[in-house]
Image (cartoon, rainbow, N blue to C red; front, top):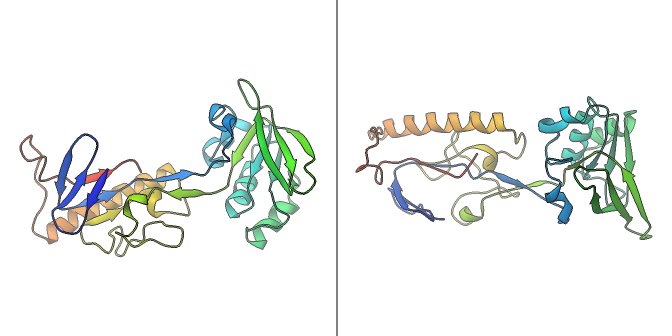
Length: 246
């Protein structure tokens, strides 16, 4: 895929075709960071998850592990206490990036325990997760923690590689809208996880998509170029193109 926002109408090239558009909604989403272990992909959806609010319900009265040491890890662990029997937070360091108040809430919760200075070296199980294999970062001592679920909370990265040097991005390379959902480039809008480092939920991304679509229509109307119904002959020159998924 390639884009050209230097002049309007904009040019969007995909593997299948090429489009011009007066307005473009960028909705390329964000991708979860992985540990790089072969079994995390094989067991994804069978005990491995990257979203506690999405999958926590399936782990009622089960033992689960949360991998990470930031705010997301603490929030996911605290959320999982509503369902799981026990939550083990596994972190490769002794200290946390998470805010002190979240750390204290997790440390004081009776369902949460910590395994620190430990790195996950394998996720165990054939058809479903049965545990994690850990290695101590200082002593190299290994241990197995039996769990039925592993929640990876080591961060997300927005899919903005295509837009670096083109759009204004924050320090975490999320797109920074300038006015509602519109970016500093008039006619270019952003919706969903590509511009949202906080919520990262399907429902909030869908709502962003609706907001962006409304912003596009209002912006086009202000330009006195309200979109017309698409026809086979007009599709290439009158299309507002959502780039990928929310």
